[in-house]
Structure formats: C-alpha cells, structure tokens
Length: 100
Image (cartoon, rainbow, N blue to C red; front, side):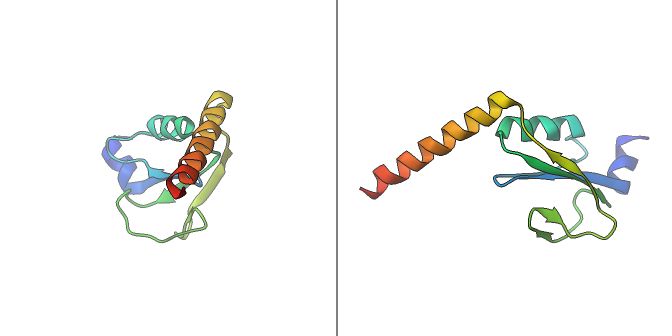
C-alpha cells in the first residue's frame, strides 16, 4: 500500500497529557512513536479512519470519530520518564521564582 493510499484510508493519532500528534504524508508511525517516547509521558494510540488532515473533535485525549480504534496505552522508555519528571520539577521551581 502506498503512502498516499495509506493516508487517505486512515491515520494514527497519539495523545498524552502534554502532546498530541498524528501520522501524515511525511510523518510515519515510527516517527510518531519516537516523538511520544521522547516526550516521556504515557500516551494512548488510536487508528483513525480518514485522512490525517480531517477535521474532528478531541475529547479527553481521544479522537471523536466513529470507528476509530483504540490500540493501547503505552509508557515511554524509563529514562525518558525520568527526564520528563525532572523537567516538571524544574518548571515548578521556575514558577515559584517568577512569582516571588
């Protein structure tokens, strides 16, 4: 199946508390997974019918599309989760300093 046909039939959608991302004509599923893993947060993955640039609502981190298939909830590699926690702590400290 060519990339063009693939993107017209369905795309993948991933979301976490920090980000959401979809596969496109130039962003493959491995690219999407790498992006989410680097972010360091647990994420959900969906297969969504239709082209990646379709307009649809997202509620509670999930695409609101009939026949969208939930593929699972995944954790980022352990070292990325640690980095994400460290970033959250640094952001919290920065907010305290900015408020002072």
